[in-house]
Amino acid sequence: MKQLAVLGATGSIGASTLDVVARHPQRFRAAALTAHRDVAALVDLCARFDPDVAVIADADRHDELGAALKARGLRAEALAGAAAVDAIAADTRFDTVVAAIVGAAGLSSTLAAARAGKRLLLANKESVVMSGELLVRTASAHGARIIPLDSEHNAIFQCLPRDYAREPDANGITRLILTASGGPFRGWSRDRLATVTPDAACAHPRWKMGRKISVDSATLMNKGLEVIEAQRLFGIDPSRIEVLVHPQSIVHSLVEYADGSQLAQLGSPDMRTPIANALAWPDRIDAGVQRLDLATAARLDFEAPDLVAFPCLAHAFAALRAGGAAPIVLNAANEIAVAAFLDGRIGFLDIERVIASGLERTVNEAADTLDAIVGIDAEARRHATAALKG
Image (tube, rainbow, N blue to C red; front, side, top):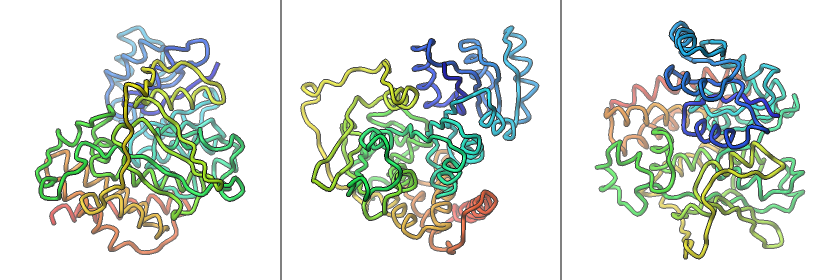
């Protein structure tokens, strides 16, 4: 039985992971659960899954968590703080770590799991974007196995040879093609996009996701981050990564080979499919998802992304080509801008403006240690915060 540490258990990926876990109690145990600030939701999960440890990342809520667990008669040990999350990621009691913390906050714990040689089920794309080769190099050095949870990267993972080792040419791979739903505003003009509200941006037509990732999907930045993640995880040249808008969200990505073949992974738009694949790999298990009926789907449409209306995707490609600090700046500026948009402090189109401002002042500096990454990230956030005012 795999002993899981689910980092970000109260988020959308955490919820989907725990749904799959609950369907296979003989195979998986949610032995450690972490949350950011929501003590009540974390305690409810502890009541359902009976973990050994519960961690709240907000250090000020340690006593609240402990009292709530005791009041419910739950045995989970209560821990708090970012260092405690890192410790759980590295704890030898847990052989599998689900890295589902949103944003840069997940970087340190993801690296901790890699250093500990864990089976690392990775949903935190921002940590890959920020850390560049550091995460992949750390995982390789310590024998960790990274299996991506994002539907697109898991699709690519499924379409690659099982023994793939980040050597595209040796495996005859010519292109990786990531699909994008296009978000809720596919086909909109820039003028119309200027009127977008936070609630509209979070109303994704296909996927049920958290608010930050929903806005990223609406701007196509989510796909930009995934392009960078794909390059990091699979070691392919940026010029050989492409994006296709596919509004049905049935084809989750494709791998093209030198003989002209394109292998694709298809499935209903439900995150439990890639999660079940990653949890059980190399086996296959029931994920609880609705079976795909292609006759009912009737048609599959594909189109090129509109980089004029949605320039965030172009910014991500540019940051990937620039390398160094650029992807870190891109991610930091985006997180600051999206948070401001969700708070009603800036408009939808201002997100792209803040990102462009950050990239314009990016200097080419090394980002090959955690300290360097954290420093670049902090400076980029300071600049982005100042740029919010226009």
